[in-house]
Image: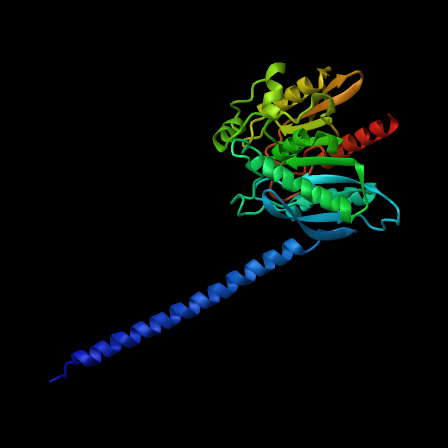
Length: 349
C-alpha cells in the first residue's frame, strides 16, 4: 500500500516551491531594475551629449522666483576676443527638453553659420509633469515667477559669455511660444524680437482651465484696444513691445489655428500696426504659407505666417522627430531672418 505524504513533508514541498518562485521573481525584478536603470542612465547621458555640429554645448543653471532651472547654451566655434554676438532664447514645448528642441529645430547649425548664441532653458518636471512652461498661470503668479527665472538665465548668459545685450530675441514652440510672448510683454525693452510658433494668443488664458479652452479655439476672439492692456499685463508698454513673428499650421489639432490671427491682431493693436495684403509664399514642394504683415510707419511690427497642412510641429524641422515637420517652410531660418532684421533696423536708427 502506497505511503501517503505527511502534512509536514507536504508543507516543506510547498515552502520550497514558494522559495523557488520568490527567487525567480527576485532575479527577474533585479534584471528588469538593471535594465530600467541602464535605460535611464543612457537617456540622461543622451541629454548631456552635445547635439551634432560644430561649437560648444555648455550647461548651466539659474536661480529665480520659481526656483532653479537648468539650461544649455550653444556657443558657435571660434568666438574671437572682444567679439559680442547676438543671443536667441529658445523655449521648448511640452514633452521636450532643451536638447530635443535643439535637435528638432537645428538652430545650432544656423547659429554656427550666422554666428549667434542660443540659450535653451529647460522646464523642471517638478514644476510641470509634462515639462510645459506655466505661461498661463497668471492668477496665482506662477507664470510671472517662471518668466523672471528665465530672465535670470538670460542675465547669467549675458554675464558669463560675450553676448550683445542690444541684440537679444526670444522664440518658442507651443507652451514655449506662450512663455516667449509673456517674457516679451513683461520685459519688453530686453528683447528686440519675439517669435511664437503654434502658441496660444497673448492674454487668452489665466488658468489651466482657460488655457485648455484657448488651445481648443475658445477665448481667442480679436480684442478691442481697451482690453489689450489688461490682457497682456501692465508692463506691456505699447510703444516698446518688440516686433512679433507668428507661425502656425492650419492643420494643428493641439492648439487651434484661431490663435495665430488673434495673436497677430492683439500685438498689432498694442503696437498701432495695420495689416497689409495677404500673400502666398511657397518654395519648391514645401507647404505653402500665407503671409500678412502688420506695419506702422513703414516698419513691420507683426508678421503672421499661416502654413497650409502643418500640424502641431516645428515647420521645416528635422525629419523623423516628434513635433517636427520637415515638409514645412524653415521656421528656424524665418525666425532668425526676422530677428536679425530687427537688430539691423535698431542699429541703423
